[in-house]
Image (tube, rainbow, N blue to C red; front, side, top):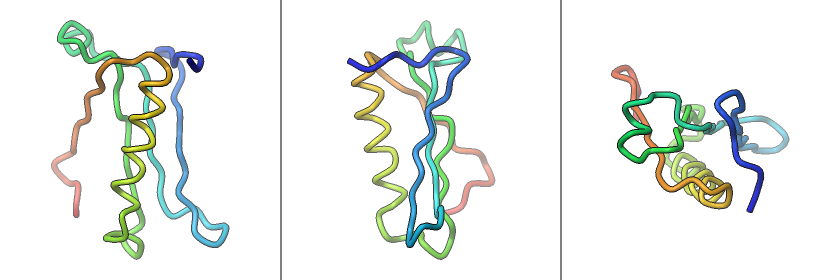
Length: 88
């Protein structure tokens, strides 16, 4: 088991192409008490992929890797919000 993320720590994954960062994903311990009360002890902070690289599976692989890391750190469930201005 890996060291658990705390309320003050965030884990960030980077997606790279030819040495250039083209996207990222992050997670942390759940910060909203009402969601903690519902069993969501983890929280997806952000998933972002540059438009030129969208549609290539990067946006799907980041959450998959983050989910495995969350489980490895002892989290049981994570909550993700999509802002109203998120685009596909």
